[in-house]
Structure formats: structure tokens, C-alpha cells
Figure 1 (cartoon, one colour):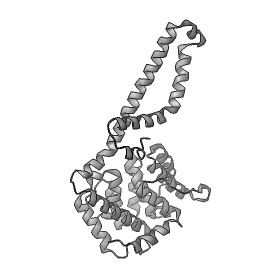
Figure 2 (cartoon, rainbow, N blue to C red):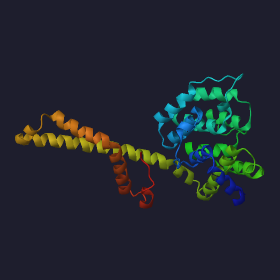
Figure 3 (cartoon, one colour):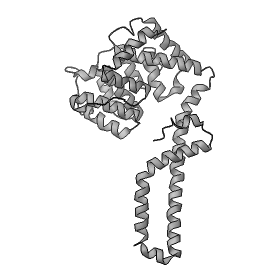
Figure 4 (cartoon, rainbow, N blue to C red):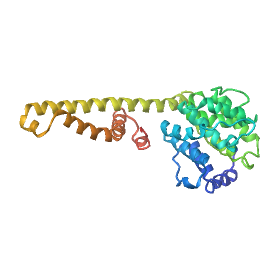
Length: 295
């Protein structure tokens, strides 16, 4: 069992290290809550922070923008740059690469440059979608899958991860803070999933929730577009019946253009608000509506 005595120093270390703090934000999927000083960071660190922010925001174009700055480099085994061995950076790119389908070939080349180690082998297995390999670190696999595909996480996988965490007393006291943070996140997930997973259908419900919200967003966009079209159509018919008002406008295109420009700029916010209205109509719990992100 992971004691508070082991957790507290680890969490305190986050306050003094922006890279660790950002990595923990990635693991718990919460926005970075400190100000980044981009001018003082190296290009690699800028890529690292930028990729984390893009992943948390589910923003593929932004991830590609930052990732491409690093992907221009072609390291070799004979003279690999330091970032090749940065587990925090490589795991972050791995998450974004699998999430957005970006740069898998480049990342595969980077992993082949690295010396064989438990973390490198695990990264390769995750990149190849081989999540059940016996040689993977399960405490790394579980948090990765919890973000990507929770329904794949089995009870055996949770038990193996827990065994890895509890059988290695140096995991939380050593110098490998990358492994320590993942182990702590995994331990928290095991507790919540073991408790919630007493019903075998629970994990399936957890997996379906984001799918359900995405579908609600699609319905909101479609229905809102129909409403806007009907509004424009109504205005056109209205102006045809009242020539004096029609004369006040130069043309139908002017009206539609002005209305379209206004709606287009507000459309994302309108979709978000309309999505919550639909969720309320279908009985989605009121207590959860405020935390729903349909951006």
C-alpha cells in the first residue's frame, strides 16, 4: 500500500519543478495551473509544455504545431541528443501520437535509438497497440489506457500493476520521478476502478460516457444548423412580404452574410450551450452538467 508518507514528498516536489507539475497535469487531465515562461525554456521544453497543453485541450492542430518542431530533427544512434532519453517528453509525445494519429513513425525511430529498458519496451508496446505484453510495465500501461481506452483495462492488468507498485519499495523513494508519478497515478486509478468496478458493466459505462458526449455534440451542431437555416429562411420570407423593410436592406446576401458572420463567430459557444440543454432534456444529472466539456 502507498502510504501518505510516500505521497506527500512526491506531491511537494511538483511545486518546485514545472516539468513534473505539467506531467502530473497530463496524468490527471487537468489544465496546467501555472504560468509558463516560454522565453526562458529551451525549444525541447517549449515542445513538451505545448504538447501537454494541446493533449489536455484535445487540440490536434496545436499538438501537430509543437510536435513538428521536434520532428524536424532526425537523431541517430551514434549521436543521440538528450531529449531522446527524456521519459517525460517521450511519454507525452506517445500519448499525443496515439491520441491524434500523428508522428508514429518518427517516434518509433526514436524508441529504436534508445537502449533497451523496461520503459522503452513499454513505450514500444503501447505504440504498437500491444497492451497485453508480459514485458510491459503495467503501472505505465494502466494510466495510458485510462485516457485512451478504459474498456481494455482488465482486472488482471490492475492486479499486475498493483503488484509492481507494492513489490518495489524504491519506486517512490528513488530518483526516477517519472516512474514514481505514473505509479502514484496508477495506484489512485486502481483504487477508484476496483471500487467502481464491482459491477462488470461499470467500465463499459465509463468508456461509453465520452462517446455519448461526442454524439450529443454532433446532434447539437446539426440541430443548431437547422435552426439557423430556418431563421434565415424566415427572414427572407418576411422581407418578401414587406417590401418597405426589404428596401432597407441592400440584398438577401447582405442579410445572410451579416447573420452568418455573427453566428459563425458565436457558433462554438452556442453548440456548447445547446449541448447542455439537450443533456438536460435527456435527463443527464444536473450535478454533472457544470463539469461537462463539449468543446
